[in-house]
Image (cartoon, rainbow, N blue to C red; front, side, top):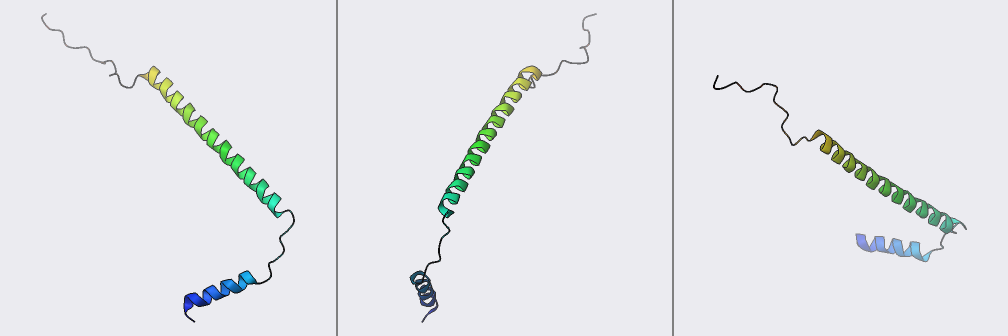
Length: 83
């Protein structure tokens, strides 16, 4: 037998053999865990969007107050001409 055929035969023997008993509450526990994971991901996603929105709003408020696109006023007055 070649290498892949041997592995295939092992898998066939495992599948044909007796199956171990499954605990009674396994499906219920798995569904509950899945619900918790989905709920947690949903909450984290909403928190992430809220933080992103808050950061964008804070940046907009800061930009409207600081006006970083404008040049700061000059500290030195221009020289007088014509006197």
